[in-house]
Amino acid sequence: MKPGLASTPANTSYDVVIVGGAIMGAATAWFLSDNPDFQGRVLVVERDPSYENTSTMTTTSCMRQQFSTALNVRISQFAADFVKNLRQHLRGAAYVPDLSIHSFGYMYLADSDAFADILRANHAVQQQAGAATRLMTRDEIAKAYPFYALEDIVLGSINTVDEGYFDATAVFDALRRASREGGVEYIANEVVAMTRNAAGTRVESVTLKTGEVVACGQIVNASGPRADRTARMAGIDLPVEPRKRYSWIFKAEQPLEVDLPLTIDPSGLHVRENGGGTYQVGAHFGADPRVEYDDFTLDHNLWEAEVWPIIATRIPQFEAVRLQSTWAGHYAMNTFDHNAIMGPHDEVENFIFLNGFSGHGIQQAPAMGRGTAEWLTYGAYRTLDLTDFNFTRIPKGLPMVERAVI
Image 1: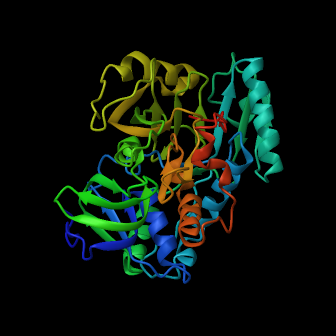
Image 2: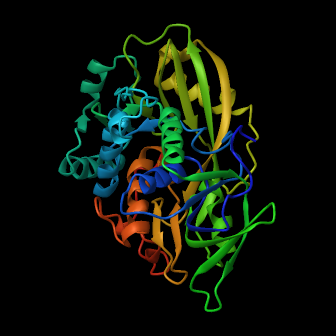
Image 3: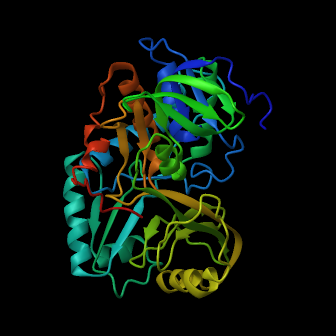
């Protein structure tokens, strides 16, 4: 247990219980604690206060505006402002670090006319939303980034304004500390059951693994890849599954002369600058099945059989590299449309979703936490209208498809 973090709640009743204390739960908790219109008690229940295997701690810590929907672009634009002005957003707290975004950009490489048409369509959406995305011909890419092998490439798309790497762990730590200082209570425990009222329209209480029963006014499902398990406790089916994603860090014998954009190869593999002559790769290969919540087993054959050959083919300068570390994490994959699921359930009215971010949750946490806190306080979104992410689109069969999922 983390020092200073109790397992037993101080009270038997809370206005808001947040299930999951990683970055989504912490962001919601912070925005609630910072809102003078919210006067309630907040409890955050985190099953693993080390956060070791959370999506928050296994992330690639990147931010992009290259999405196919304008709302997702605007969500990342707020995130960029939030990160760059973190201390100001957190009311000048002295412990909040000065952060920046290492804006090397994302480089999407299209190897077919059909893929190029998708990049063009996405570019139009991004431009309309104010993003600085640029389309690049093969010759333009070769001139700016001469290390790529581009024989098969038709078109590229890149944005080097507020798009790249940032210190997500520092943001998470600051949000968690600031929310606790603002009166939010965190405990190291696990919600194992929920009790609804006779009509089935509200969750009245949650039961903790240690046996305590805690009454709740509203409950937020911020449990990442375990979101479907949390929803089932309230009798709700949620199309979110844990999907395994691998990451590798390697050192190049001959580092590139310029920063490497986070390059999305047509194979689906992505590789980015990591600093000091090291680079980080992320990918999955073949089938993408649901995995068990605690399955972080590594496939050590992937590097030699799949990953390194693709990297060395796309960037020949990476033929001589040394693998330094490998780990696996989970996406909370929304299998319905690869977009966030937010807001209240259509029948269990006080069950609030904050789920299904499908790999882009770290960069969306500031806007989504703010929006969820607004909903909990006012019953409506006050800043950025996030209604399109409401759960009700799922039973209606109306997907909000995000095509730019990595």
